[in-house]
Image (cartoon, rainbow, N blue to C red):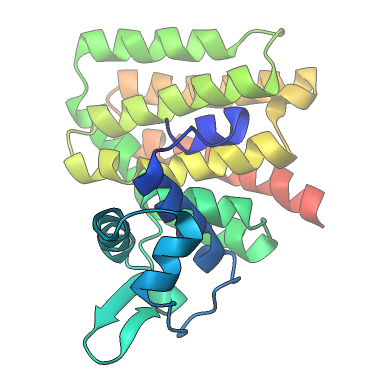
Length: 242
């Protein structure tokens, strides 16, 4: 289950290892456990979460892989500075969304999307097969339905953007799809195009322009059409937050 599904359905049930990761990770990202602080010792954490030393250590390894913590001998396990956190990790991004959304977060997310997704669209215009272009049109057509809910339009929107990342033939584009999911989760929460018929119509038309540009094998037009989609989504959110 990804970031968007987490926002729609809530966090999925986890085992003991996942529970420790979820509780500590969420507390760190929310600032309840401050940057630079030393986590309690193993014994205290084992008692707090009711887990074995093996489970706790595996959870610590998971959090370290997400760059939230770092263990050092004779010092303990320290919470790393925010600048070192792995924000493209889906769990870290979900915890960041759960901690609350502000304008800085929206702008930073948009800057990353503008750096990556127009390039993905341009590459898709070069590399997508004819069958893939037909599939992209089919997804765009499903966006153009007046009965969409906030949840359903977000899911189709995500499918469209992930398809373009895949058609770019650049594996790194698909690897950073958590950024796209996070943006759509914010939109779902604050400013979904499904809140008005005109919003849905505009969303569908803008995405169809991307499909047209890719079908025309026009990288520059595809990139520009993608920028329009991202900019329009950010403008809706900024209006709400303002």
